[in-house]
Image 1 (spheres, rainbow, N blue to C red):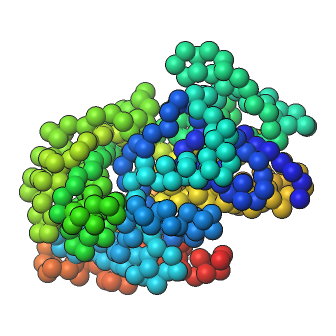
Image 2 (image 1 turned 180 degrees about the horizontal axis):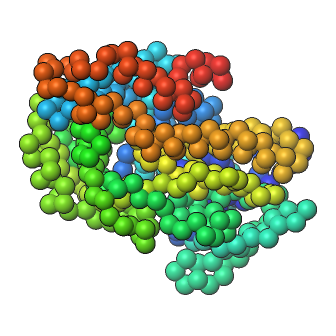
Image 3 (image 1 turned 45 degrees about the vertical axis):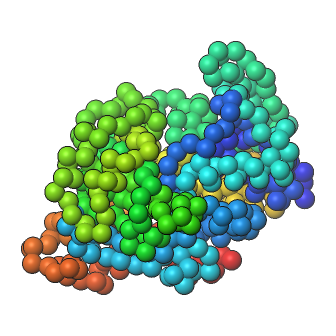
Length: 417
């Protein structure tokens, strides 16, 4: 095997996963992160079975199980609590590995600690904001500044450079300088976490409503469950058509109850106190639901994109983080088998670009959440506790089609083990 060493711009979930995957293959890498201190920020994320299978291979299962919830089911409801579709998930659905719901910050710290332990703390360099690069036949040089002072803080040399620097990627901007800001969907999201009594079995994820007004919630911390509580991640979403072209995708903007709570005033799910969920939130953040158009090319010589930098997508389907994990594992596998970097980067793009483009476009059509709008549009109002206005076979077809598209149907996973 040819010995390579790489530069990873971005110390988020995908960049750190890539560092671990490369290390497992005996490939050296350094991670450069713009912030000076990496903190456990954010709210909930889902780790679907295809990503969990890879995280197990990286030896992370024990640490994830300590803090995450093993998701038991996913259900869709109308705003009056009537069931549209319900399906088992993870181990309950017969997968070999769980589906996890986890606090993004908890997952980030698991990855960070593993990288520092396995690669050495000196290979996670903070306070280094990537600005530009040069490359030639021998390697690539990446340049960094202090994000606040804009002073140069150094450069790094390697055989390849991966931009895992998020939806507002600087590397993507270099490749596509005229692309502009992320594309706003017309949907505004308010995200929060609330510790309160569990709903349903304490391990369920649900979505309720329709395209114009939606509520999503699921528990994300095992520690709360041991105390008889549920640390619930929730997303309130409503349609607010406006021109947000000038703003960035900032999920840290503070949200206000009065901007969304009144729109849910007449909702009654029956098994969840929505007012309590909203009013007792530890924090609320507001951000527009945005994505970016699929790109015609990711890799340029020794340099490529990964994760949100390559394929930022709407959260419909809860699949963004998992696709980034698949990017990282695919990249490491291909590079370990390659005799030269450029061939590996081309193969990585061929394996992942079209696949993620299809998911991004499907998510713009609401992904598997389409079933909620189907009921909204077609229900005559005569259904009982479970909606019968859409045949069960059609609902199952929607769910199965998305699993196959995203790569986490059981047949696909068994074939890739």
